[in-house]
Every structure is written in structure tokens, then in C-alpha cells.
Amino acid sequence: MSQEKQPCTKPVRVRDSSTGEEVELVPIKVWVLAPRGRKGVKIGLFKSPKTGKYFRAKVPDDYPICG
Image 1: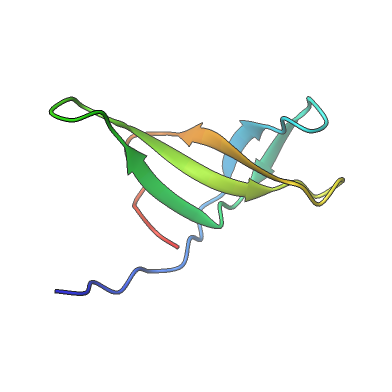
Image 2: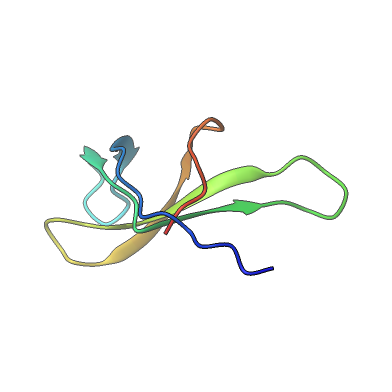
């Protein structure tokens, strides 16, 4: 039951936590983070273009799981 994940292609506006500015980036990976039995939120892994550091940020609920 391994499901192949598609690469992320759609850019999202997020706040870069390392520089503090708002940037539009394509996430490296997107997954759902949910407590047991509750509705979760979608989290994306991004890489800062200025510092090269990785950070996580919430992505819209209609964004597909990818990466």
C-alpha cells in the first residue's frame, strides 16, 4: 500500500522564521499534523532562500500532500 507522492509545485506565501520576512516558496514536503481523533493542520517544510536554513510553516488546507 505504498502511495507515491508527487513533488510539490504550487508556491505558498509564508513567513520565513529565520529572517522574519514574508516570502513565496514551494514547500519541499507537506504533511498533516493532527492529534489523535481530531482535525489536523497541514505543515510544510521550506528552505530559506537567504540563510539556507530549513523551517516549517502552516500551509492552506486545500494544498495537496506532496514531497
